[in-house]
Length: 147
Image (tube, rainbow, N blue to C red):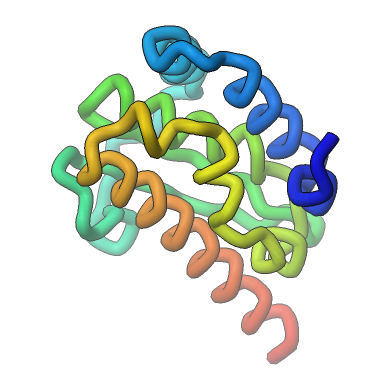
């Protein structure tokens, strides 16, 4: 395993490895669509402006809850591939502490090889989704240190 992936949280590292094994872009798309199908439905009332990922062509929403010091995300998108990206990130980051999430750098996005398979706007969207998830984690971390 390369040095980079080992610094990732175990779930995320596992997903990155899964994508790295697929050199064919079509197989990567199929993997993303599989993740999209697995994604838990998001309540409509959570689809608010503050949960919307900015800079995405499609509609993307992410919510985060803090339970016992760990973050649990929910998300949705009106585009299946983007929904797959959301599901990928949720599966990779759910159940981590805010500080664990804040330590993750976006380099893993490159490692998956997805950047090559995605259009620039989708690749940028992937990054923006990840950034919103980190921003929500930071909010919880700040809230925890304030109390």
